[in-house]
Length: 457
Image 1 (cartoon, rainbow, N blue to C red):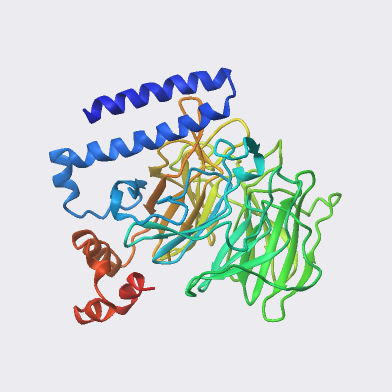
Image 2 (image 1 turned 90 degrees about the horizontal axis):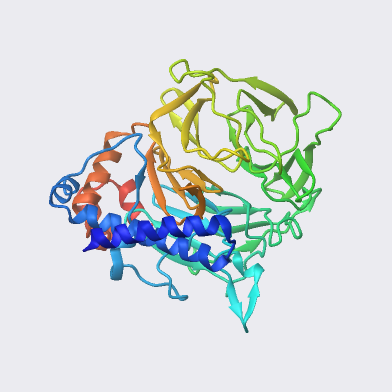
C-alpha cells in the first residue's frame, strides 16, 4: 500500500513540476514542497519496513564519505511540538546553521511559497522565518528555541553566522524585498543559557555598511567581516571588530581600479588559518568567481594576495570545481592539516551536486568521488563538528527540472575520526534510550565525560 502511495506522490510531483513550469502559482509551489516531504517520509518508511533493510539497519555500520539522509521526521509522536505546533523547521533557503559536537542551530531563512495570511492579506515579509531552531544530534529532535515572540532581528536572510565557544554570533543579513533593508548589527545567543535570548551587542568605531551575503570568521579576539552586498553594490572590504573592546575598524577597503584588489561579491564562503583568510567562490547578481585562483587576505600584513590552486589529477580536466556561489563550505582539521569541504551551489545556469576538498597547506583540490549530494542544491548551509562530521540543511533542490525548497538534513563524515567517536555513534545506535539516563548514570557506566556532555549539554 505504501509503495502505491509513494508512486502516486511521485507522479503528482512530476505533474506539479510540469504545471509550475508554465504557471507561476505560489500555492502550487507550496503543494509541491509538501508532496516532496511526503515522498521522503514514505521512502524512509518503506526502507525501514523492508525485512532485509531492517536487518541491515539494526547493525551499526560506520559509513565515511557517504551523504546520508538524517531521518528525524519518522519519530512521529516521540518528537515534542513547539509552541507553534511544529515539530521541525519548514522548508527554507537563505538560512544559516552552525553546530557544536552535540547540536545544530538554524537561524532565519526564506520561503516565498509559505507566507502567513493576515486578514486575507498576503504578507510578503512573512515569507521570512523569524526563529532559531536547535537539532539535538543524540535525540534526533528539533526544538524551537526562539520565535517572533522574542526580540529577534528582522533581517533573516543571507546573514553571516558562526559559533564561537558556546556563543552564537549572527551578523548582517537582509529582509524582504532583498536589499531594501540590510543590517550591520551583531547579535549573540548563549547556547548554555536558559531561557534562551538573543541580544544585540553595542559597538563602537567604524562598522561595516549594512549588507547581506557577507562572510565572518573569528581569529585572535577579532571578528572579521568580509564582502557582501546591499542589493546593488558588491564589496570585498575587510572590517574587523575587536571583541574585548567591541570596537569596529575598516582594516582594508578594496579599490575597484586597483588590479591587486579582488572584486566585490556575496554568498561566498570563508576559510582561515593562522595567517590568511581565504575567499571561496561567491558572485554577483550576474557573475560567479572561479576557484582556480582564490583571493586570500593576509591578516598580519593587511594585504590581499591570490593563491593559485592545484587540480586533482584523478578527477579529469580541469580537476578544479566550477565557479559557483550559494554553495556551502566547512573547515576541518585532519592529519593532512586544515581542509575545506565545498558542496553544491550554482553559477546562474548550472546547479551543482558535487563535493570537493581543498587542502589549505598544499592548495590542492580533491574531488570526493564517493561523495555527492542526492541532487543539485544551492542556498543551503552546512556546518561541521570538531570530529569532522558535516551536516547540510535546507536549501533549494533542482530536481526534475524544477526548483523546490527543502528541510532535509544530510550528514557526511568528511574524514575518519577517532575510534572513540565511532564507538560513541555505535553506542547511541544500539541504546536509543541513552539520552534518558542521568549524567551520573552515564559516567558510572564508564562513558567518557566528553560524550556524556553531548547528552547533557
